Image (cartoon, rainbow, N blue to C red; front, side, top):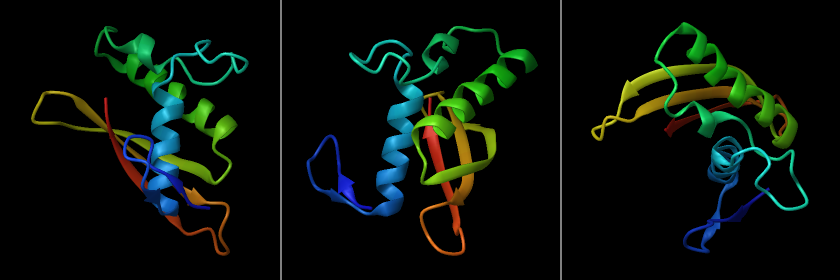
Length: 113
């Protein structure tokens, strides 16, 4: 499936559309979508949380649950905390397998928090 870039209105190919969808899902605070109160996740609530192992587990769970629920084209296999961006923001690497294509090819994306 292809879609549209939400900032430019230009067409997006499959992988970019999935990445945009996952980004939207995990960065939308739970309860903020009208008529879809269960859309999104708790990731935005973790912004000021202490940087420890417990928060890291909460971070991974705040991504895997909502993506499993709202993005049927991908089944996640790994979520990892990566290096910091030049602006000092942590990045996440999200890996999975495409469920909408024969052979379930791999899918990978990075997300700066």
